[in-house]
Length: 290
Ligand code: ZN
Picture 1 (tube, protein in one colour):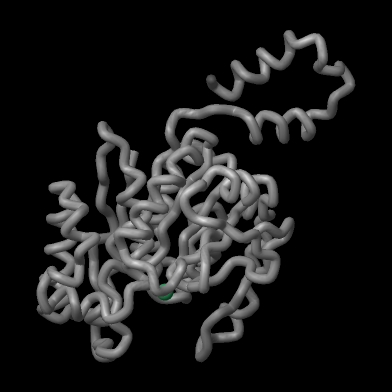
Picture 2 (picture 1 turned 90 degrees about the horizontal axis):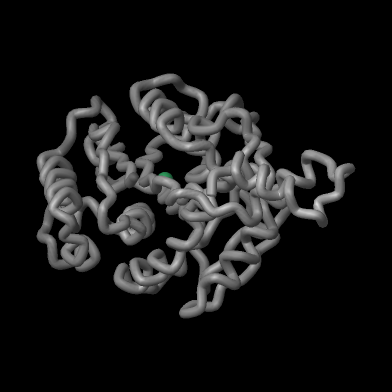
């Protein structure tokens, strides 16, 4: 049901008090409305400076946001929140976490004051049955979440929560968990995986952005497996050869891609964008499922 139709529907209910304030009505609509499945994004977030620099990547993110229906809320699976167990942030006002060092003060000065959504966090906890989900009140928005969200929705007016990455679990385990998040798409929740498909900070090219051969190979291999829907091979990435092993020295920047792919519906398409490598070993490749 469209939002406008739902408001009309509410209008004919006898229990709707005429004096109900619009913001209360909006809360009800946001909590219960059913939407077409919201698209899903994987964003290669790269350098935290993307929060304050204008470049081809931030332009690609902003243009993609404009192509989406306005979300009721955002759930972000960020590479930068790994936990023992699985948690969702459940605070009203998630703080902006500057979880990096060596950057200009102007980046530390950035705040992204989007509200949280304790009710959505509870929906996630209640809606996922195979894995216990804890409600977290001491994290917030790490840079994998806020750098991206601030370029997609700079007004910070869409509630946002994070789902943590349970470290030590296999890619298959994460893929299976991600499938359980699908119900959120019909509540108008934009699910964003935020990481980088190719991400090796140990061998950065400090001279220029020319990608290493293995980085090109890994990016091309992954893109081919994505476009041919061979997700099982991407889940079993440890068998994909040496270039992919160089691209994924640790899994936290790769797993958000697995979450995104798990959410693809039968008839949905994948659009790749920002397909470029920076500093030799970081692929900024993004995708949209819709
Ligand atoms: Zn990162």
